[in-house]
Amino acid sequence: MRHDPTVLSQLTCDTERLRELARRIRIHALRMTAAAGSSHVGSCLSCADILAVLYGGVLKVRSDKPHWAGRDRFIMSKGHAAAALYAALAECGFLPVEELAGFYQNGGRLSGHVSHHVPGVEVSTGSLGHGLAIGAGMAYAAKLEDAKHRVLVLLSDGECDEGSVWEAALFASHYGLDRLIAIIDYNKIQSLGPVADTLALEPFRQKWEAFGWAVREVDGHDYRQLVGALSSLPAAVGKPTCVIAHTIKGKGVSFMENSVLWHYRAPRGEEYEAALAELEQAE
Amino acid sequence: MRAAFATAITQLAGRDPRIMLLTADLGFGVLTEYARRFPRQYLNVGVAEQNLMGLAVGLALEGRTVFAYSIGNFPTLRCLEQLRNDACYHLANVKVVSVGAGLGYGALGMSHHATEDVSICRTLPNITVVSPGDAWEAHEATLALAAHPGPALLRLGKSAALTANLPGEQFELGKARMLRDGPDVTLVASGSILAEVLRAADGLAQRGIFCRVLSMHTVKPLDVGALVAAARETGGIITVEEHTVEGGLGGAVAEGLLELGQVPKVFHRIALREPFPSVVGSQEYLRTIYGISAGDVVETVEARLRSRRLGAHV
Image (cartoon, rainbow over all chains, first blue to last red):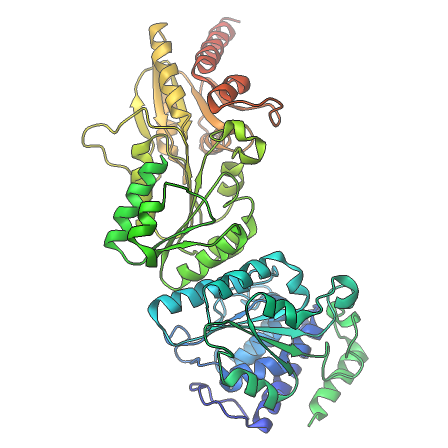
């Protein structure tokens, strides 16, 4: 089942359809990182369900008109999970699925961190802490024009160590940018270890609330919860919304789940075969 | 130059609603009138330069022409990566405006001395780097940059203008202005040090040394044609800048000339050659400490031309 390539505006909670899209994103990301020998498969797997819900219905975007003025803007601020984003875009018709084999490859356009040279990508990322400020600028422009589109930014939890995230958070609430939505892929593991042992973010919800944001917490692998949290926005009029999505790093591959190893390790050989088998057999 | 910028941006905003001015909580008294007249085209983002640059890029990607205003190194070095990744890589229409170029905030101390930003920023792809020498150049550069797509750095000196434009003169980004002509040597200046250089040229003329003076307001892209002509037609090239000696105007001029196989008969860079200052002082005072004042330029030019003549007899 390929996703409808042109009109992605119908917001329904067709769980089976979203599950299948997420499964395909995961399989693509696994194949891409394995073929490339690249890092961040765990980060891709943790946000695959979020991306499936976004590109499976939440985002008003059109693959036949990537620059359509009325589109929702989506910024993948956690640019290291580029493989998952490219996979979602390919499944939705923004680029040929066959091109995913060109991830990391010489002469291609699918760089290891998100590139705006890929159709459907608003902004290149890769250095953490850049996306929310750019999104706030886009949301401010929308506010000036009284435009109806929204700006959604997907951040990682480790990214919230960056002070620039909180500069943007202050700004967005001060100016009441209620068309700005930050989604945090809170998988609890950053580059070298658990978030809690690196720079603890808790109480995380209260931090965002103290910065003037309306906060929703969801299971980031539960399609109904994700659709629910992202379908009636803003969560509070006059406030930007933060959706804290509790996720599992490496979700979907048993031996990758909750393991710091798969932030950097590239799947190969038997590991790859075992991971692929799990994802292909997933319901 | 600040006033010239304020006048220009006010003109621009009045005729184009896409013009926006963002400040990181600086510009007291300078931006007040603009903010009052154009509230929808003005935004004080607070003391947050990374956010300043990110917001500017977001607005620019949505069709705005954004001037991002602050002082010293705050809108450049403090958020250099946002300038590189977000503004330059995306060819965003963001014009960074930095007031107090060089030693403009002399007595405020080294934190406020913008003395490495030209060399650092000119290495960024896609950027235009403009360092006006007087108020007219600052005004015209503001208008020109608004019409020129892509990211830019506009460095504004604090000091007032000493020169005016010549009758009928048109400003052009990337084209040096010839403010004096003479056969003996060419002085190439960038930024508000131009006033010292013009005084030096007048002083040298009284001593029988007649200089060509170029105001190289645009450091990137560099007007190599004017430099080649100067190397061929005059007795040498001496660059003058209120900036560290590594990689700034002097470095750019050397690169541009050598790459074309054009070696001036005399070449020297008058710039900051000492480390961070250990004494407090005004811009005028610190220029004498660093050896870039008008008097220092006169002495250095004389010495360089003398050694060239002596060398020629050896």
